Length: 239
Length: 239
DNA sequence: GCAAAAGTGTTATTCTTACACCCATGA
DNA sequence: TCATGGGTGTAAGAATAACACTTTTGC
Image (cartoon, rainbow over all chains, first blue to last red; front, side, top):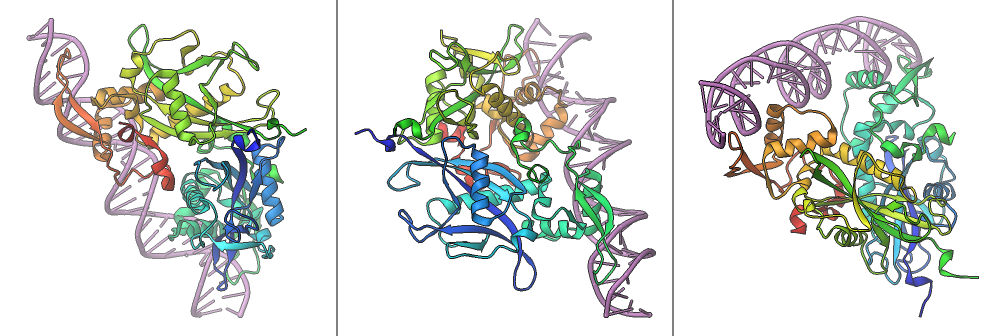
């Protein structure tokens, strides 16, 4: 018998990262998951996503999923990997093309859980559907690796931020302290950020300078996707 | 009407790199292409590949394509990217999952062109079918980038090689000279290669030490795919 | 012996890291 | 004025790069 099931189907899923303050006020790396309502893996948590529409671009599909799940626009979006093990989905063959995204902490803080969507600490997940635990592990590894040589950290923040806020992003994700002085010099020398001239007031102490992400590509910039760079959604383009 | 064409189909293609000596005896970076025999893009050259079989793993499909095209086994194989622009294939929606591979120069030297398979200089390609020019550009970028921080260069060589041969791989691909002394120290310190104790004789000058790739992961090793490392085919596993 | 590649030694320079110290503000 | 994070200075150590020099072979 010849049916639709004779060829593998395509799904697009997205690992959505954000930083949200916990009870103590310290930011934590979190991702939203959706509860599956049908077999296979009914009732387990899974990455948001769905089948690829016939005329939809892969990145658009990831972006739409992200919007439908969180109500937010991604500040950074990049393809992660295509997972196609024939045994990864019982019953039918599904190839999942997975994206990973960063969303700003400010907006994400307004998002609350619904019955079928919940935010989990990225390093403390339950058993997920399919091979989604492996996928999140890989996305986490890629986020940490890329944070060290690329300029994506601002994707967790708003349009303007202090260097202390930016440094905190690095410290939370890389899970180690970073020297404030050296961090400041490295960032300013790289041209990744530019001072806005304004200062953040209302702090208990000396008011810090506000910075903005510098979208201009600098010499130490082309570490991204090379010839595919235009396929990456940046904060500037999404605005 | 509901037909198979209502859902996107999946193809797996592979960019196969090798080093082959040109007329002057200097190695050149080359890739094999196949001539299309049907529309769309009939008669144009394209990357080897084909539809994903229902029960076949993605990497297996790439490996099979490589074997059918070149008669060789890959010494290195890694997923490159999934290309899914709805307009990239006129008439039907095709998502291509592309791999890139390295094959040893010794074996590849025995491969000769057939009517529908030819080897091209990687930096001097004709107009290719679909978006395959962009794909090769990206694969080239990834090869060059990865060569600088990873340990894949031995994939172009046989089981044993001299440091001069390994250095020549870097020089040809990165297109710049490398200091022999510093290269030796860097390689030996990284633990990437180990001396076999044997020497290559028959050279016009001082016989060089033969080295072998060290498959043992060292401290400076985990720059690869992180949690997905086991999904990369290495020379050791393919042997 | 000579040419040429193999292999070793040495130094200047740059990058990284650690940490001391001053500055500006709210309470 | 004091506590605290913002911001600057500086020096030790490591990694990189440039290049001189010695060794070993075939011819």
